[in-house]
Length: 185
Image (cartoon, rainbow, N blue to C red):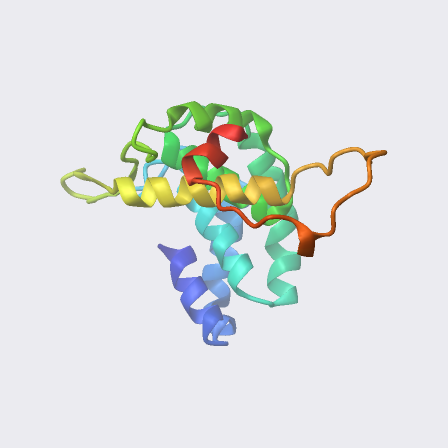
């Protein structure tokens, strides 16, 4: 919740007003206090995802220098960890933002796609007192698609071909259904 508050404040140029909160968030990241979840967020990927979103939404160079190198280390530690489709998608989204290729989690996420093209519900948070989980299949599916597209953007370019290439303006423009594109990965 603190990371989301920071994102709001930084979005409006008021991040400096939450210096103590920012320091506390960095300490959580530094000491891996997120690994077993929190009262409201059961999986560590929520913390890492929201932290990546904070950095992605701001152009603050101090903030990037203060958090990004440590975030890269912590995300790399999580690659290959178990998780449902939501956790894998969040991890892949952070990796894409950080420019980290993550084929391990991508190979785990792709077969979890259901026949209708979506992914099963992921439980993003829970009520603190009752422990009732809150999730949404649409959120899981949208993050899975975002994660896959993010990995496509940082994919390794193919080796140079000896065949002549067709300029983009002369190529046929056809749409590929998302399910076909996802399975092509």
